Image 1 (tube, one colour):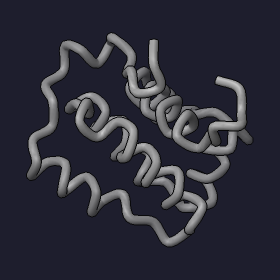
Image 2 (cartoon, helix red, strand yellow; image 1 turned 90 degrees about the vertical axis):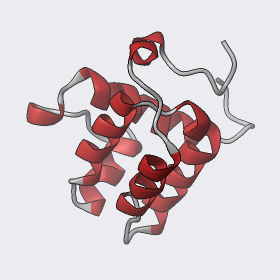
Image 3 (spheres, one colour; image 1 turned 180 degrees about the horizontal axis):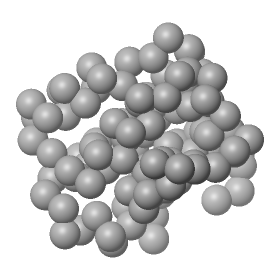
Length: 106
């Protein structure tokens, strides 16, 4: 599997069209630069393959406060409660992958 592969669970979900992607980009704008960097890398790496399932998981994460989102991205904590859903875990894994540099092990 290469760096841009997405988990097969998303294969059954329809891809996002350009309008949906544009709206998702807009919704993902954050006030904290660190979060924006993770999100930018996520879109750079995965945008052509994003599905409705990914959008649902990503939007759930975007409802968090910036510091809570950063804690999840930096593995300081894991999703709990309503966020403890398969699509949230899938997207969180993709976001975390985007935060790695090429010098770090894969």
